[in-house]
Image (cartoon, rainbow, N blue to C red; front, top):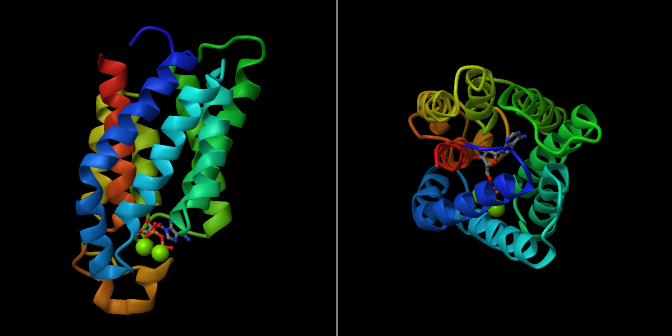
Length: 205
Ligand code: ADP
Ligand code: MG
Ligand code: MG
């Protein structure tokens, strides 16, 4: 993938925005089954703001790219996913900055450790653990599989999202449905798989 510099992280978030734009209707359809039918619109609005801010401000380090993107998600997404994904990106960026010191190009292992810290912050904020039928169910296996490869992480995220289908939701709106939340893929797990897919595409280019 070349170096994991600021340009790499910008390319990732641009690719993620494009993929979310393409898949927004599917995300909303998933959310209409067990939520309030806005996840695609929420993610599209948030990531299009991220893309615009990154182009306007051109942050110079990986941590600055992730911090700006996280702030934009928090300020533009009305739903639960805004603060959760915003926290994920901001805390991943912060951990990366702390690990890097003066350097600006993490390797995949350093990024994996930072992502793990970001996921822990999402769990601390939202209280979800694996098996609660949330984005966490795609993110945790993806961060683990990053020790193997970018593509393994994307595949683990897709499998993690698929594995939410039979689960009963214990966090977020879907939890209001109780057992009626079973039999549907979690929209946030599906969007997390898109983010990891965009990451693997960016790294493989
Ligand atoms: P809202 O539910 O406010 O309409 P979205 O539809 O944009 O927000 O996002 C819903 C997704 O957010 C869910 O599918 C789930 O993956 C994720 N989510 C909701 N609550 C939590 C939580 N407490 N922890 C982790 N993820 C959560
Ligand atoms: Mg929703
Ligand atoms: Mg909503």
